[in-house]
Image 1 (tube, rainbow, N blue to C red):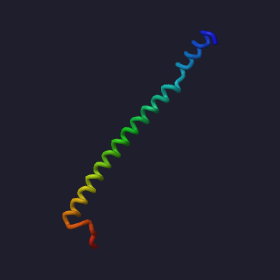
Image 2 (tube, rainbow, N blue to C red; image 1 turned 45 degrees about the vertical axis):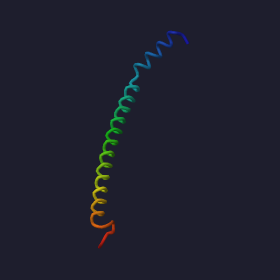
Image 3 (tube, rainbow, N blue to C red; image 1 turned 90 degrees about the vertical axis):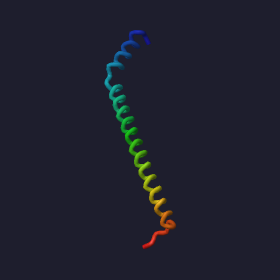
Image 4 (cartoon, rainbow, N blue to C red; image 1 turned 120 degrees about the vertical axis):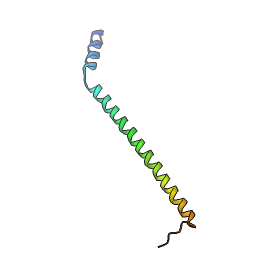
Amino acid sequence: MTTRKILKSTINFLKKEDGPTAVEYAVMLALIIVVCIAAITTLGSNANSTFANVSLNAAAKGGAAVSS
């Protein structure tokens, strides 16, 4: 390939709009993943606190047996 051909193909590549669009989608995906991880972590902490509270109350009442 000649230098002129390489330069022309490089300029054409930089003018295309596919690259920035892909980057925008990647950034949006990364933000969605961060929000999901934060939500799951929060829900996990809340569930852990709830189960610890239930366990503590069951132990205080003399065991984990459920009476009807």
